[in-house]
Length: 305
Image (cartoon, rainbow, N blue to C red; front, side, top):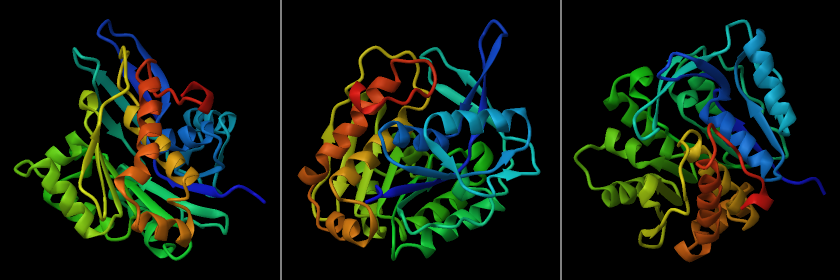
């Protein structure tokens, strides 16, 4: 039987990394693109719906994805230029971004083998493609489980009150949400982290996961209390793609456990305990620990975990 397939929807772009000496280098990036590559590197069949320009950068992204086992959906090439992000680092090598995005996503067709849909970041928040992304997530819940990474970028997403409203609306249709502590601080500056996790579970997801950088991860299933696990990272080269690598590992682990993937996966996740999902959280932590040991959004294979 063919292996169940994951559909990832979201932006793929070129990260233009500028160093203090003035030199720059270009890397393939974009949070959902990183997740798609991460899943493929973990031996999952992956389709990726995005918006690329028919230019040199778009062709480079397509080749990068193809070489790593990710299939682009039809309509992923558009008449607009390929999106870019200017990347700068602080003294601790944490990245910040300035975007030039063209997000005119084509209507997304979800196939019969697509048992899980993952989306997030700019793809759910920017128009005109955002509406098509959100529609795909909402309209196929009968046949596929859904995950979401808000990946808040207020400089391009706009007003934080509007962003918060959009995030909470999407939480009503997803089974798994993963966010960073920075995301939560931006969205809820005056609320305790554990209170936000409880609030999000009440809005719909059966699993809420919060990554906290060097402090590891906190997670909660619907019928259990929050639990924390420490990071597995050693020496850190930079943090580019670490959250995306965690997301890929988390989804890989959940799929392997039968806790996502169609209605059966949803039913299993709805009744899962924190102990049941712990191996998936640990796979996510293992993936991100490998990623931060490399410059850029490195995606580990199973034999590296």
